[in-house]
Amino acid sequence: MAVARPDTVAQALDLSAHVADIEQCLTDLDAALVAGDSTAIEVVGKQLQRSLADSLAAFRHATLEGKAPISEELKQRLMLAQARITAQQALVHRAGTAIERTLDILLPKEASPTYNSPTAGPAGRVASAYRS
Image (cartoon, rainbow, N blue to C red):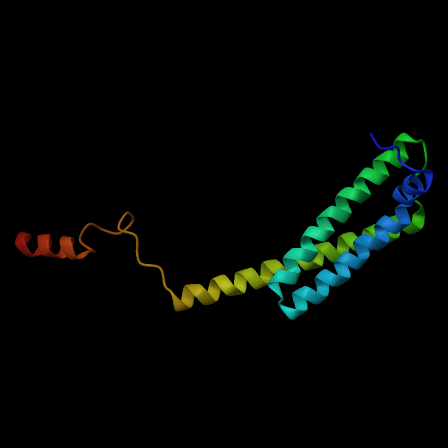
């Protein structure tokens, strides 16, 4: 089992570095979203998830060590990061909705026989001809 060096532990506990990493990932994700680069979006999204997980672990460790993990400055930066994530989610949702609407226009869905009247389909029209 490897023993963590004190400077490695200090780096891991430097919460402002974790927040800076999250902010950088968000900036990279903004650029990828604007460029429409799906590969970059996926790569940066995974980086962001790792950064968030690492940050959470560092925050928990700092709390267990009895240190006050979040200063006012860090709280403000985290709140701004949260707002950026919310804005990015809204952007992706709007883009998905626009794509869905466009596909619905280009590829209309066929009517479901489950909810139509029995005479609406071709077999129903044939059967109606014999009832008249």
